[in-house]
Image (cartoon, one colour):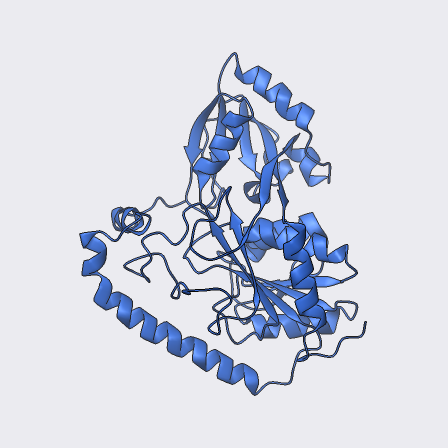
Length: 358
């Protein structure tokens, strides 16, 4: 578990201002170089993809224009479940950020998070659909389609800039921070320029989803609804028991006497902490870097109860945590607007680049 370096903390302070600071402007020459290199890499990826035989299923890419997390994983899970209800049989491909190794791997419920990555394992556990990870998303897509002939739709988790994987449609996710200061890396948080309008020829057709109460950029989009679904003990969560609001209320009552410890190794821990407080819990905060490994538990062993996210729960096998604090998994209920789902469904059904056996 590594804390952010002073340089990384300084950069993030510059990125998430509403206007560029003097420090960000000083990095603008490097940002220009980054745009040239990354733009060339995306062009090379598209050129390579055009020379490959088409995949037999359409590809829906979920990604963002900013570095780091903005809510892609809950968006991916919500999309998979919503499109299943419309008759699709999806599979998911992902890079598997932070995992050991880069080769192809099919993720199963028993795959350790260290081998799959925390987010792919969470998606696999929550949705139950076939999921393959690999640095080469195109190879992962081919392997998944070969192993699972029933799959007729591929959802790519965090693949917007990986242009070697062709795409029929995309979902671009922003959180409440929007595009920050609006500058590309390293002067700002943007992986590629923010379009002046939407839709745009620079990106595939699709929808913009705001993981926030209100749009946080100038681009038109849909605001997702997110709220806490409840809590459940870690061992029961691993057995498939859903989170329960009554359990969360009981924990809130317990916290009236002594605050509970809340731990989160996600992109924006403060959002998780605020949601707990809005649900009536008194907490002590323990924020950790996104994707932090939890091999050595970061909380004091004399703590009585610890609240964690589902993304962190996948890194904590219950048989390894039978002593010490009681661990409670707090789940998120994430819903996408119906109009966004209907729009994507139409795009995927009318994609002419693949053969639909429907």
